Amino acid sequence: MKALKNEKILITGPMGQIAFPIAVELAKDNEVWGIARFRDGSKRQHLESLGIRTRSIDLANPGFRDLPDDFTYVIHLAAFIGPKPNFDRALTVNAEGTGLLMGHCQKARAFFSMSSCSIYAAPQDPYHPVKESEALSGEALPYSPTYIASKTAQEAAARLCARLFNLPTTIARMNVSYGPNGGLPAYQFDAMLAEKPVQVLSDRPSICSPIYQDDIVAQVGGLLSAASVPAKIVNWGGDDGVDVETYCRYMADIVGIKPEFERSPHGVKHTVTDNSLRKAIVGDCQVKWQEGMRRMIAARHPEVKLKG
Amino acid sequence: MKNEKILFAGLTGQIGFPLALHLARDNEVWGIARFRDESKRKQLEQAGVTTCHMDLGRPDYANLPDDFGYLIHFAVYQEGGLDFDEAFRVNAEGTGLLMAHCRKAKAALVMSSCAVYALPQDPNHPVKETDPLNGPQSAHCPTYAVSKTAEEAVARAAARQLGLPTTIARMNVYYGTYGGLPPWQFEWMLAGMPVPVQPNRASVCSPIHEDDINHQVGGLLAGASVPATIVNWGGDEAVEVRTYSSYMAEITGLKIQFQEAADDPLAARTVVADNTRSRELAGDCQVKWREGMRRVIAARHPEIKLRA
Image (cartoon, rainbow over all chains, first blue to last red; front, top):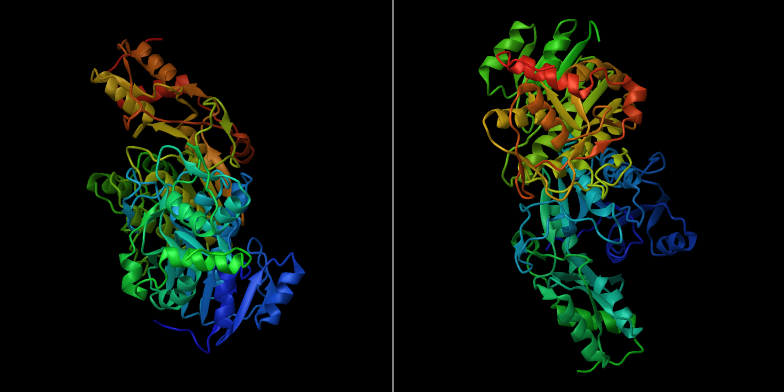
């Protein structure tokens, strides 16, 4: 698998759950820059202390004057996600912002744009592994009504700019990410630890393809090397489909707590991803979900004793 | 609009065709399309339009001038089937590449659709441009709503990237000599077929007549801006499908039958457009719906005697 070394890399939204471990890892062997709004100055200092150069930039209205334009790779993970129905803001940041960023970085060898499997129309059969060519039109998420429409819009902008600037691009549709730095399973575990129920759908199994942080960090370079014009669109999930209830019961079991589930027809419809394309590019995942969930709990909750 | 050099994409469609003929009277109009209907191409050429074959998904602009004063883009991929990739290639990427070719223009008008709106709970609620997106998949063309959302995203991004003043107009229900939902519904009545309607939802819409399109296009182009102006484009009167269909039956002495069928692709799910913004930019509509429907029937069926 391709490891990035001695490159000049721009990462957007570097404090994010997925971005932060990538930024930290890449900063070891590369010149890494991070842009975000940095409303929290201490986070910015933390990045700087790790050797990451930072600039404060709002993608809705970006001033690129202080940002170099000679990055060799760009990893664009910043996204607007919020509970309010402000569609104009969401499209301004996620679609227009992505386009303007690609315009600024058009000299790069490759551009990576993060997308989401939630843009797929949920297949009737929840076990059906979704291919990249399948139907779009995801239902609005209950916690962020603008997310699906604006991530679909972001893909459109990235697809255009790949062709407009002849900028090799990878659009990766993340399934469920998790690890020491968070993610849905991490938050579900925290809920169980606080004796709160985990929310699941009442009329549909919640099967997903969780991918562990270390696999994400290890695969990003390979996905960048597969960037193309027109843009390469690839699912990014773990190798095994697993039901939310199954992995929650597993997590509860290894720490000796009792899981509770709250069933409702309203909630996130997960999908299982067909990973053929990703596997062809970067190979298999290294971390099985059981092992990943153990590692995640050990890292986030060292006070909790894990059963064998 | 007078003495302008206009590039018109998608001028063989029901909306584009009469508008292109109208504009060709006083302007230098160039038209690009796939021209699958040779007779339409001839008619356009006879009206003084310079035509040029173009597939917007795979455009070759080498032989097309780039000194247009205005771009009017009504072309759309609207096939049945599930080719989302092609829908994005044409509607999203194609729009951006076309705008880039016309970057020197004074303004671009990009046609979108009220199909991008999430259906409001109250079918009589006039949707504003800021209302929630995430339109439902339509049965007649599953790729339509999502790829028009993608087209808007690209037009927004390209407007800012290129500094090209842009208006994105969300068409409600169009009707005119060459088609639109009400004329087709009339054809079904004439053939003795029932008009399919949604069973559990009033199909209230804002139909706009061809003549109003012709009158308003200049105002909408004059309202183009960076970032893009987004504007609903519909008639000023809200009317239910059953109401106008019954009127068309009444003035022609036809019997009308409605067939309630939620899954029928021809049973339209419609919204009412809030026209505050379009009225500011382009003024009020001149053609009342009853008058407009009379005129359309008279133009399409001169053999039918209309009752008062």
